[in-house]
Image (cartoon, rainbow, N blue to C red; front, side):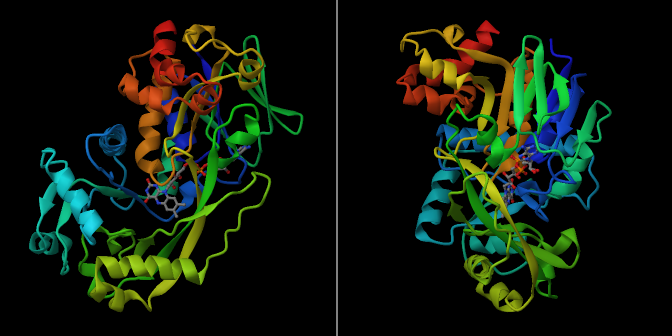
Length: 412
Ligand SMILES: Cc1cc2nc3c(=O)[nH]c(=O)nc-3n(C[C@H](O)[C@H](O)[C@H](O)COP(=O)(O)OP(=O)(O)OC[C@H]3O[C@@H](n4cnc5c(N)ncnc54)[C@H](O)[C@@H]3O)c2cc1C
C-alpha cells in the first residue's frame, strides 16, 4: 500500500489526482513549475461541462461516464454558486450534420434527466432567447471556475504544494521515486503521477505518448440587456456561457489550431484577432441576433494549449519501461506480467478539450489502481486509456495493448 505520492503538474489532472489520493489517506506532494497552480490550460476563465455523444460507441460511453461522474463529484464539493452552476446546456442542430447527430443520439433513449431532444420553440423557452434550431438539452450540464476549483482541491490537508519548481529528472529507486529539478532533490515518494500535459513526453523520452499541443483562445464579451436573458450554455461548433458567472460578461469559445511544438519551444500566448473572429463566427451559428448584439463587445480573452493524443484518448494508468521493452521485445502472446512495468509510476494526461469532465474520473481510476480497489470504469475503457498503447502497437503487441489494463489489475 502506498503511503506517499508525488504529482507533477498543478492543472485539473494533477489537482484531481492529488485529491483522489489525499482522500484515501495518502500524503501527496504536488509540484508545479509556475508560481500558481491552474495557470496553463486549466487557467481559463470558465470551463463548460457537457458530453458530446455520437452513438453507443466507446468514446460516447467515456464521454457520458466522465460527465456524470464529474457533475456528481463537483456537486459533492459544495462549491459556491459563483464557482459552479448546473445551468443546463443546449447543443444545437445548427447544420445538417449536427442535426443528424443529435437526432441519432435522441433515439438512444437516454433518461430525460440526462438529455432531451427539444424543438426550436422549446429550445427558445429554455435558452431565454429565440433559437432557430432543434437541440439536445442537457438539463444538468454546468460551468465551473477552473482556478478556484483547482485551489479548492489542493487545499486538502494531505496535500503539500511546491511551486516554481520545474521537474526535469525522475529516478526510480528500489523503494520509490526521487524527483529532481536541475540536480536538486525536490521530493521522494512511493508513487509518482505525471500530470504535466504537453511536457510529459520530456519526462518520459523512451515511451511514445503521441501528444501534441493544440492552441485555443476563448473570448470574453461584455453582456447586454438582451444577452443577459441567456440562462443556459448554448453550443454550435463553439459555446456561449450565460453571463451569470460575473453578471457582466460571457465566455465564448473556443478556437482550435493544431500546433506541433517541441516541448522546449516557448508557447505563444498572444491573443489574435483571427481567433476572436473565429469565435464570433461560432456565435453567429448559435444566434445571428446575439452575434449582432455582442460583436462589438469584446473585452479580452485567453490563449492556452490543450494536450491531445493522436487517437484523442487521454493517457491514464501505470507505465512500462519503454527503453527496456524496445531492447527486449516480448512475444505477442506474452502476458501483462512479463512486461517491464515501472511499478508505482503513473500518468494522467492528454485530456484534450474536455479535461474538466474527464480528469476527475481518470484521477479516481488511477487512485483505485494505486490502492488496489475496484475500478470505476469498465475494463474495456481502462484498456482504451492505457498509456502504453502507442509503444505496444508499434512493437506489434496490439492484443496486449487492448487487454493490458484488466490483466495488470488482476495481477496487481
Ligand atoms: C481554449 C480552451 C478552452 C477549453 N475549454 C474547456 C471547457 O470548456 N471544458 C473542459 O472540460 N475543458 C476545456 N478545455 C480543456 C481543458 O482546459 C484541459 O483539458 C485541461 O485544462 C487539461 O488539464 P491538465 O491538468 O492536463 O493540463 P494543464 O492545465 O496544462 O496543467 C499542466 C501543468 O503542469 C505544469 N508543468 C508542466 N511541466 C512541468 C514540470 N516539468 N514540472 C512541474 N510542473 C510542470 C504546467 O505548468 C501546468 O500547470 C479547454 C482548453 C482550451 C485550450
